[in-house]
Length: 463
Image (cartoon, rainbow, N blue to C red; front, side):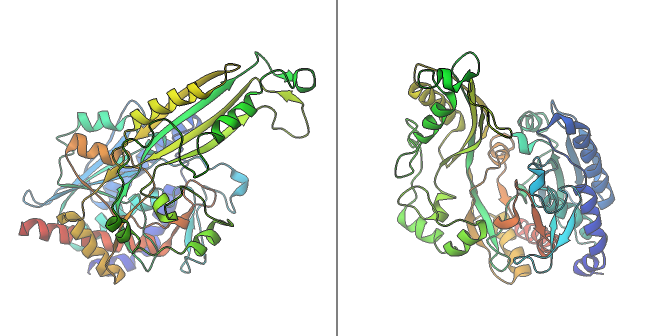
């Protein structure tokens, strides 16, 4: 039985095993789910063992554990380090889910006529890293494993991977490899495969504005007492100018501007603005003047408010001037921008523009370095050949707008480049209600991954 025959014979089981993993609410951001996160780590370890991995271990960190496993076939063969994460985003707001977030179901959609798996973590990242686990089983059961494979599946990616760099430092020898392979990204469309060759970095902060020493009656005090909610809204509005450029002092100092030729090459990737607007229900796009929507989402830095609160938000009316108002703000960064530098600039800027009537507190949350991966390496060529075989079309190199901070750490600490060969779609609603992952995409990944290992081993031997 060859690899594809084994995959077809086990499709139903491969789906059910993923469903079992998706039923575990491994929400790393909420301490109330700590037991579920640990339980998910144990489940991942069991699945690795069943797929044929050896040396499987749940390794403690100062936070949630890392699950490690390996399958070493030949000292002369190249070694691939597979990275993924088993933690997921909170499912809130629960009322916006069409079906329970941790009860996976398959439903047809316009972009997924074969059906999509609806559940938190279906695409980000349980469905995607689990493809590698099932691909390992396929290769072991059909005798087609061509590379040594090591797995490192962590449980804190959704909260910044704070303990992963110390883990890398402590386990350099164990994690020695030739390349890192990650499927926490996506493709342009199911008929337009792509490989992500760039990721933006991240600076994430929480700001707090404090005015009076208590909530005040807006009739007795309104017009004289500072209103932290009003002031916070004004401060946030001032962070961008009329051209949607970020006004934080020094924000663009280190931004790398792409050449006209590079921008023209990027424009070859198809982007349908009308379809984009329709898919997210908006009337018009907006963003930094002088750049296309695709460029704004990939090669340009951004600043966005991710949450804002203060005052009375319950039913009915309560006429108060709140004592405090807060917001969470994320800044996506491009190559050469350093998250610590940008965070420091934001803190200084926000404190400087605040009026003397209020106190300002800015708390850095987490961040990550931007990353660009080469397209001329044997590993990239192996990924391209594998996807061209299974999709019937050569994949497009594509810069993504998201952040995977650990990619820069792999290079800095382990000296390893990364191949970002993901299979999700932008429309899969990751981090949102009704997150889903196409059945087509899940199985296309399991079909493609063994070919990556085959081609990488051949290219490595030919060097």
